[in-house]
Image (cartoon, rainbow, N blue to C red; front, top):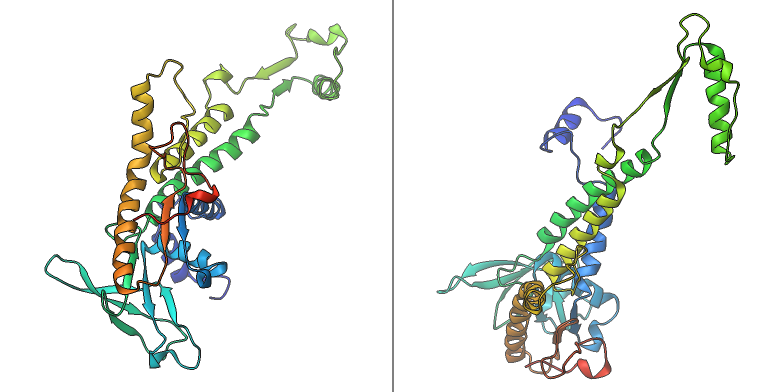
Length: 324
């Protein structure tokens, strides 16, 4: 697309945003999408085969969170692959076909290295590893919070600039204005006291003070200050952590919170993650039926171990066992 843009192109760009004056997809939005993706993926610990480690493992996490599932298939004997030996692999896919229970029956695999799109039957030619039961991923969740954080980012930046509240001072004469400038220079230089000729305080004609001050706020405490906005930022991040199952202490923590209230917050923060876990473990069971030699495990990083009081499943060496 050439620059400058033509009228039709500008109209198309501006017309696709509602309201048109608010552009949420900014550099700050991209930053928070990236940050929240990494934050969410840190809670999901997959144990993948050795030949899927490294950069390939990073691709696994991206496809799982973005699409909600990956398709696993063995392409060793497929003629569509060409000269490159792929073997056992996973890939993003599109789904079609329905069975009696309205479940997808086929996965379509499209890749530049393939001579044509593969149409594989699920359960016989491929298997799905699903993060979510509806196979829709969690990118809507990530973008929802990224949009809020990006908008608040902008407000915080403006607030930081405006927190340096300027004084709007006026002088009735040129001498009065120059006096005020010199006073502010001395004040900003750090001098503890500034002296001026008190005779300037009385105007020779009106007998009134030549100095005037225009206040920006009647009470600066009534303004939405940076400290409040930073608190809201932590609140939004805390809400996101609760959505993806990361333990969090609310920023506005109550001093006399009961044990039941505390446990309720833990349960609320893990409910969605447990749904993902149930979906993944069910998928792994189906994968094992089709590919018994393929070893894939899964656990939640912060899941509390009910057999060990006061401890959780952190990255200790004994916590990578398969969950069956």
